[in-house]
Image 1 (cartoon, rainbow, N blue to C red):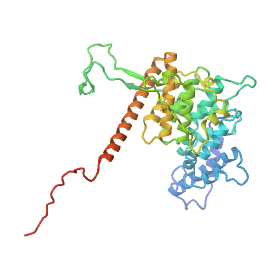
Image 2 (image 1 turned 60 degrees about the horizontal axis):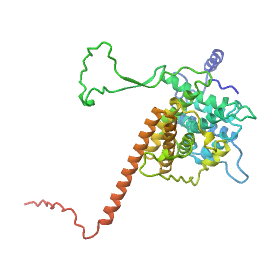
Image 3 (image 1 turned 135 degrees about the vertical axis):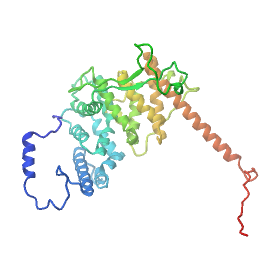
Image 4 (image 1 turned 45 degrees about the vertical axis):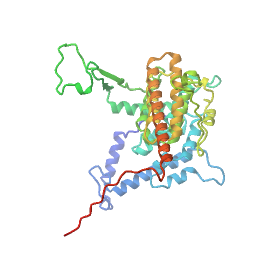
Length: 409
């Protein structure tokens, strides 16, 4: 299978332009701009829906057929007014696609589902691109596990997964335009940010330079996934997922937290080192979603000891950003917050064992923020219940202001 960007050749464009020169009796029925495209908003809306439905129908043909008497879950999705958005938010469709991506034969160069994901991400429909991003945690986890723990009896070829990851990497590299992501660090010699002069004077020291922190170095074009660039490419793909995480479905974020917890390893006393007492996180699987343990078992990632992969900073940094949103972001489900708490504490324990200073500082900060948020929530709930229980009919209330009546003379 070849994953190539589609571009028209000069001959095809010439032939297309010749066809456009032919007279069209219906050209006056639809207004068009100078490029020949329709400017009717209703026509554009219907065209986008038709394209999304055709992509969903193609996806339905790639998935295992439903049992006799059962309705295809993608049929109801394609019949909605916003089929791409319905596909993104459908847990049944997510479980069906995840089962195929987790199968032992997935990710090869001839995988039609990887071809569908690749072509869909290159489309101009933003909702369809979000659908592809929602499967990046699963693709990254399965891909990293198979590259670090390949089966001994059968060599693994993961060109399909790599093509999807490279599509995201190339898109991000193009948007950055060869520039690094940087942040200005405040001058710590000043008492606070408010003490900065409004018009800063030039420093007397000619060698003085402003403090600039590099969040991500410039991205070099990559035509293939090399072993030395694997962590960077997967990290950029996860960073693309993080940028749209507010629109990602719950099952995708929950999967990511479980994978991150598996990368951290087993529980140990270090996981509750920053808590006043050991925390017992009991995560019950959702009623309408497939168990994460079963999915990991199908993808050969069930043993947590064999799930530990190298976590360089290029890969760990976007992982911690995603976990930070799952811990502290607005409107996050409690199940996702609990799973993120487990993952952060396990990553902290692993960083403590590996003596990774950056990872220790970052994970410890997330744990303290999570603990502070949970303590504040517990205090608020206790105060609310106490005030509710203490209020009764004999409790004095605030004195009301006397009413002022205007009387005309």
